[in-house]
Length: 142
Image (cartoon, one colour):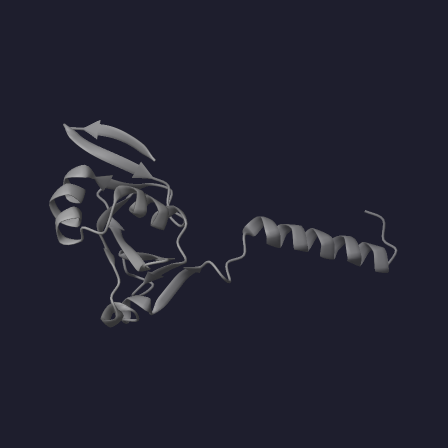
């Protein structure tokens, strides 16, 4: 996580699992997240964004993304939204999920699931193996 200053405001820049540039304003952390959700830390927000178990959105058109991660003491959620700069998201809030919030409308559209996610490199490798197999069984020279 990188930290920089813009117009006197301290900003943390985090590369999230599904978004390359997510920013967290220190003022938002101190005046909202830390006060309303004291269980949240900057390190926990970073961990959730970089290594989530799930990423949800309420619809394909939604600009809000809900990153979730299960820790030993419960499930935590970080909400990000679009920012005025293109290709940048901003942290809106982060909190521990209670049983009432466990499964809601936010979970309608899953865009990332750690258990079933396949990386493009793995697909490419599998495809290369399939092509090699095809050449082998039909005695075709590359």
